[in-house]
Amino acid sequence: MTVVLGLLAFTVFLFVSEIVRIDFAAILVMVLLGVLSQLPGLSNLADVQHLFDGFASNAVISIIAVMIIGAGLDKTGLMSKVAAAILKFGGTTEVRIIPIISGTVGVISSFMQNVGAAALFLPVVSRISVRTEIPLSRLLMPMGFCAILGGTMTMVGSSPLILLNDLIISSNDMLPEDSQMEPFSLFSVTPVGICLVFTGILYFMLLGRWVLPNRGKDEGSSGQSVRDYLKKIYGLKSDLVEVIVPEGSILRGQTFEDIMVAHNLYILGSYHKGQRFFSPVTSTTVQDPCRLAIMGRRKVIQAIAEDYGLEVLPELDIFAEAYAPTVAGVAEVVIPPDSDLIDKTARDVVMRKTYGLGLLAIHRGGDTLSLVETEDHAVTDISNEPLRAGDTLVAFTAWDRLARLTKDRDFVVVTSDFPMEDLRPNKVAWALLFFAITLGLILFTDLRLSLALLVGACGMIASNVLRIDEAYEAVSWPTVFLLASLIPLGQAVQNTGTATWIAQEILELLDGWPIWGLQAGIAVLATGFTLVMSNVGATVLLVPLAVSIAVAAGGDPAIFALTVAISTSNSFLIPTHQVNALIMGPAGYKVVDFLKSGGIMTILFLIVSLTMMNVVF
Image 1 (spheres, rainbow, N blue to C red):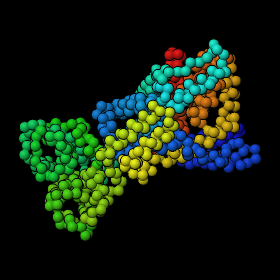
Image 2 (image 1 turned 60 degrees about the vertical axis):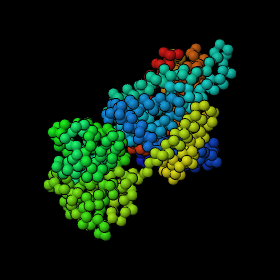
Image 3 (image 1 turned 180 degrees about the horizontal axis):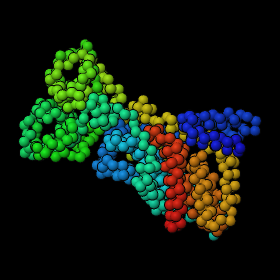
Image 4 (image 1 turned 90 degrees about the vertical axis):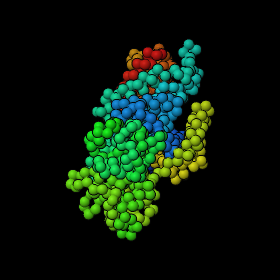
């Protein structure tokens, strides 16, 4: 037990100090367990023959499968549509987006494993982050915490609550007739869970600006703000805006090229009679009513709109999805010396139609040629500018078109950080079918969770929604190694009697306390245990102890048992919970971020859950 306590302290030290990466810290502790168990007197510390069983555990296999299912749904474009719907109702402000995302995930989490709900929404939140330029670190923690909280809304929302009724029935064998406990129904805990989810949402809405970390992505990448990128690299002051051209507009019949040259702006998209055109040919004429996606200086576009009776929308609407940074953006291509385009103009080769490149600027010998006025250079009609060897073309393009240009000998694609994924919207029916099958297996059968999820994952791969290599890439392997490596430590805490000894010592300290104090002590104890061992292990260990204490003190043993099962979801302080481990990598969180945000959430969880359990029951 002394060795186990020492290893626990060492693990917490590595996590908090982050001397080494957190996933490697977990692997290191697992290896130490195996090595120490070979020393005399420590043979029961860990069974070396089963040291790596954590990699085949139900929890780890479930996480791998659910990541693949989420990637499959994302590959069909479904997640982008969900993100667009959330943005339509929630706008682009943090205080409005967080409640919608967190509330939705909380409800979903009440009927499926919380890590599944979190993994499913991870690509959605990623899309929203890119579209709104809100750092992922500001959105993922509220989503993850509410996924954990949502697991307390029904008796099938988390593993401890699923186990609870079985533990109650087995505990009844040891209780007298007058103390027998009744199993809880499916929605018995719903009032408690709803209040916890509401508390989590309110917490981040009111205190989010102070407790959430602000870790932005690297500046200058193609997936960032087009405006900031063009200004920083080329000195071009441009915004991408959507403009409504009403019926009867005086622009009717004018070509896009005429408008672009006359007003020093770029028309990058058009929408007319239900059809949307990405980078339309500049010889296209305006047909009203329509909508245009225009890039230029906002104040210039606003002035033109007033002169021509147009309406400038505050945010992209119809063009929001097609022009999202995950779909399209600014790219740079160079004209090599052997290119067939040398001495030809963009108009000659119909560059937009032929190559999908909406030319914004030509960078040549230290000068930037552009239709939009720059800080150092005058306006140039670049569509009629003959191309030279070595010219860097700055263009707005769809990423799938740019991927094709990497194989074109007339260009050298300089941009390398664009998403080279090919969406498969034609596979959406297959993706939804296998997602529905998986959900049905989880909700309506007794099939093991990991197996039910693997059915869906294998279905996605078999139907070619995802290729097998893409499935491997979809898995966050640091998360897998973090969780799998910590499982032996939790088993050591339980198998060596350390957990029982800690529990008994703490319960002795609580002897003589009033019933509400004993219940609070049990809740704190369960919270502490779930940080260093699995929530299932903590529940199995503590429920019998809590029932015994309740009977001895004259309390309700069922409420004490429920206190344990709910409090094992109070896992926000360090990233040992599956959901916290899942969101840590994508958002770039550090352990100190969880200590800061999770510390307050832990206290709020204890106060709200204990209060509601006593009010409801």
